[in-house]
Length: 288
Ligand code: AKG
Image (cartoon, rainbow, N blue to C red; front, side, top):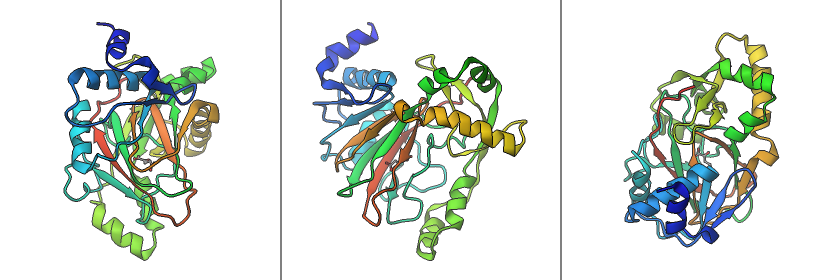
């Protein structure tokens, strides 16, 4: 059965609404749960591979347990390596704007500081401020194709060192109250790994750029040269034309292909409260 046939049979094309030219689609008329039929889960996965980030409105019926029951249908759940799971869950990562580290306002791909970083993230809007707090995703496959040929060749040959030392830099800047939170949730492990700057997506065969804020430096390049190159590659990834932006409502769910995207949570909501909860699906070691 071809992918097109699978999607058309299960999710009407009219219910898949593109939200930007390069990535992002909303799927309408689906109520997410752990009990969805296998064919629908496969179709959701196909739409995800095609659009890289997919959105579902009106999923207020989901609680942490049902979010995990749905997410596990997409693969094996993994807890965050250094931040303990939210109370009563096996793997849910809570991002609460009122607590240190709860504002993910840096371009990143999730958890690239471990060897086999997650393949999919499932994020649920729980408390959404009346204004601001959108999230922006970018397409790292299109960004690779945008590179002029000589830069693509250079990227093909490079490897980068990724580390979560970044999290600890945030911790060192935290207020006393936030530091208490960090001390409670961080297990204190600093991870470091090397990834090829260009990986081949195991399901689509696309070449995607593996960069983002966990990159410390490029293998074999002095820090100064590496920073310029990093900025150059990132500028292709984060170009506004290469992004989709989602304005959250409580109960929304966003699911992204973490092997083909970066994202950024816009920190423009001041002191207002914002809480999102993420379930994360195990990935594979990137292959170039
Ligand atoms: C993450 O889960 O990695 C995020 O960056 C959260 C995005 C958001 O807060 O909207």
